Image 1 (cartoon, rainbow, N blue to C red):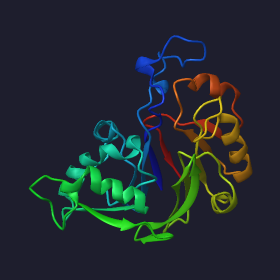
Image 2: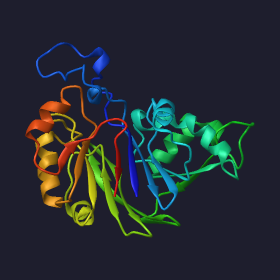
Image 3: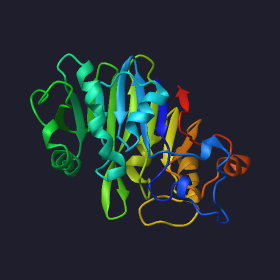
Image 4: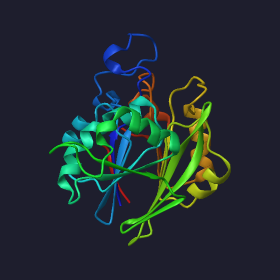
Length: 260
């Protein structure tokens, strides 16, 4: 199993407009230049894309993403969905010229609202995107392995987290972005993962995201061999965090590839 971190940042403050205030990340370090959050997971040769940030096309070019078999939505916020038009090239590469899209009811409804021209049995014209919408089941069974959905709080509403398990190796990966807590079933299902990714927005509290300290406590409770934090603002500096981070807990960065 391979996980490619296409983007690891948030719309809530990006380096190019960051003010030179105390606590701003060092812009000379490339690992502090974060595009909006999305990941790409490969299990037994099958490619799973989670969310489509506004920079999705450039993320694919930078990371040489050349195949998508399944598309999964954590939720319908713009920084996770508006790049979906750029799935058109991946649709064109598939035999039926479409991509299966999985999400909850609210996310699929938003896809229909933003991309009505892509909701067809076949592309509306050559080169157009074509999405086949599906309610995300509790467990999505594929030839590459399983994807289990879990429900996570994101401020006033819920989002999906995903747990990937590769068929051939049994390796397990939990992906929990854009959440304000991880407990109960989500915590239990993540235990035993070979790697975990957790939302960790910033040091200061936020109503919809975990702080660095909150994510650290969750990481310790799950106790995976490796945990990466994701969805950081410009106030989180890569080198400063890495100097003090507990063993096995690190910041992700755009372009990071991790093989389990």
